[in-house]
Image 1 (spheres, rainbow, N blue to C red):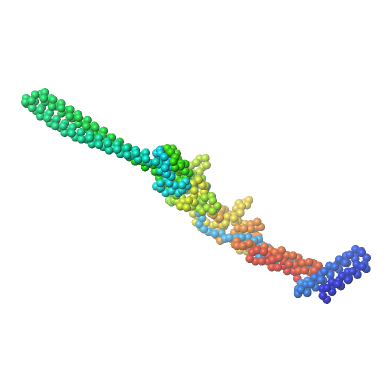
Image 2: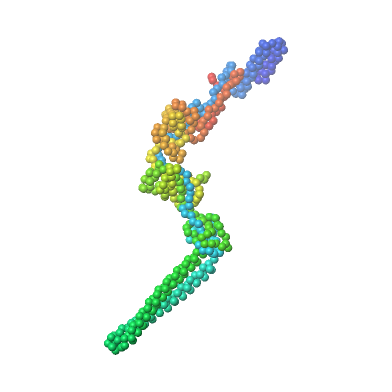
Length: 475
């Protein structure tokens, strides 16, 4: 009997029942039962016709099967990691301010007309590079005049020295003549008046020699003054060209070609030395003894990270410890020097600073996310060999990157939970994952239709390496 014939016979029976029977409650109840039976028979015939297993449809309603489970769906899925043992640096963290190693204000040292600007504002300049040029002509004229004055005074000095030589020789002659005439006067050969006159002439020539010597000294002083004036003229002329004092980056340009600049007044530009560069920061004064003791033996390393999205740390050394503790903040000011070849650190920036004080050898560390905090302090969940967890209290030390040092309560190699803490408590069984991929999730079962004896069907588990099996109807 095929499905069409069965359907026709069923409908004939229903018509006869509804036509001949009175519309009582009993008739309606019987009709509904008969309808359900017909639907069940048709479903069984259809499944048999499609090659289904007739034993799957038992008499009466079959019980829906259980949904499949992803992996071990009944256990709590967690991500775990083993406690590691490694060397951990002891760092002091702070916020620092980047400063130029040196900054100068470039000003003109002579007054004159600005004729040349040899750079663009913001350029990086080298030590000794030409920056500005001021009109040289007035200073070249002053230099020429100073040279002429020096030549004149040297000639006058030579003249005074010649006069001194001549008068010195005459004085010597007069002295000898006076002595001879004195001898003759003493012997009565020459009158005493003649001897006295010769003596007076000798004294006069000696006085003239002294005056000549004074003139020579005055001439020498004049020559020295003119030499200084000449040197000053050369210096003033050299100031007409301004050079960079060191390697650095120029700032804003405050003058234009053709401007009249005045000596030591207008700031033409600034130059900041950023190779190397300094970072100033402060740490609590309680660490000062440790810092001083470590500095006595080695140069302390400092890392600085600019507050940029993709910033990489720059490495430098501690170069300065202030001689006074700030009593307001109870902190000590420090400076670190960085070579800064790539200009990663820029003056005026803020940077995250890390001062390395020491390194703890063979410290037990776990990812920071494994450490939980409760009413009784910090703890971690340990996964035991039987796949159950244990809540264990711990004591933590400092953080190192993404890890936390465990000083008490944990041994190297023990397995700790890093994700999935919400469902955990001591004794709960878990399904462990080392962090790769999405953890399994149990499928959901759909019960069979009781009237049709339909088997329950489970939805396969999703995620994870294991998938839940399809639900099966109870036998």
